[in-house]
Image (cartoon, rainbow, N blue to C red; front, side):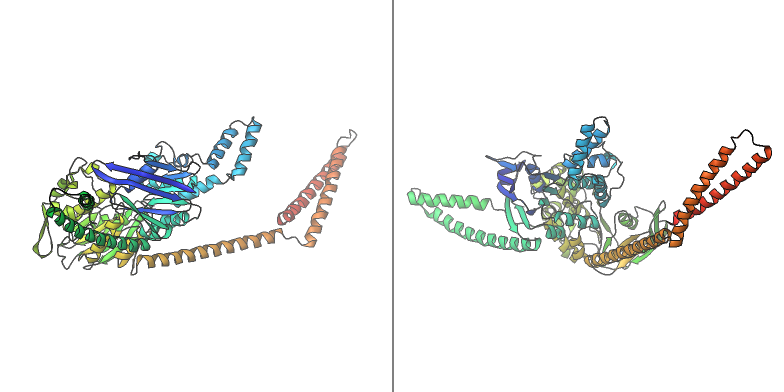
Length: 625
């Protein structure tokens, strides 16, 4: 079944052509990743597909199969801010959720028996009775546990995770996702990977997470220079096939250039009066000229900024401790950085990774210990939040406000326009206002503002968010050659594996461990430890269960003699109750003498005491039973 069909679709942004007359079909079961450079139009293409923006072009057509349940996750979630988390999760036309709503409405009118019966039947048919528990489980998996918190009180990352949870809860058949791994920690990413690998799901997504792409997708489409190229297979296959395509294009381009030069010489030699055959050749020449003038050579970001020299003392942490309230993030941490170290920081959200970076840069004060920064150490701090760029400022002005030029190796210098060109901002685009840049282009510009200051100690907090795969590859190569120190916080496993040499593992409760292995090795070890922990927990649970069962069995087991005693007591108590009734009735005789009444009273009390004694024994046996 064909889920999506695009025909002759184009889109322009000002004078810039994002895509031109493209065609795309996606069938049931396909899992496709869309890759492109930042600013090429990835998010715009998704918006056109989902109807959030109109398609352009003559005879343009965008069709999604009307009977397919569609789920969409864009970078900016569309949530009602006054809903609670749980209300937002249940704001859906999902048949199960609708059945729950009908049942809840029926509960408000118990006198309408037929309505109640219909609602109960629908709940049974949809298997909806435990659905709320499943919703809460999904929200908890994505680290959203305050179900009564309103949407407007959530952070941007929490809203993105809530939108993702809502999407999974709706159980769509066709998912369109724009950067689904942003704001997720590693456990969440691996859980989402497993979910998206389900064979009944069809998927189109934009992602920069290469391990995620490799494990989830079976096809990649690249948006390049306004056209679409399809590659079957994994990310590794894509890299190989793309390289082959570029080689072939370079060969064809070289042949075309030689032909153009030859035909140009012929044109210049020919007299003005030409025959039909000559006119046909001229027409072919003009088409070739048009094609060559439209060719843009593949360009890559170039990062070769010179870093300042490091001194002998770089950065030292002596017995550093930090807490927020009762929560301890660091306790007696010691470390001395050496030249050229590349360290990764890992740990679940909320254990203090970003706070650690702020302690190093002295944005946060320590509670104990001290941080010593070397005299020649210059930090370049790339934060998650980025910088607040002036929307009304031009790209070139953002850079010249920092410096007119920067020093390079061997005494060379680059001017601000030249360095911007190396970061893929053409001279024309340098005159564009910041407000017109895509999210990825802003992050690239922000990265340049960091490097313009010639740091020798780079601190990168989630640098891979919103950067395209091509830029990430070049950034990785730069960091591998960077002579200074690098400290990285990222959930991008591919990036971390390629760059860092060892890890600071934040384990919680103030514990930070130096782990001298790769990120993937850490995850393997972590999974083994988690598995062992779960085994131990299950073993403990089994022991407790067996102890309870044994205790219960001991309580429940009556011997043959005890069962006989219980039966005998029941009969004796019954006889005593009858006797008590007879004595109580005897008190109604008006001819009783005082002595007789006293005697009857003593007898009645004796009977009551015996009954109480036997009932107590019977209850002891009943408890055992």
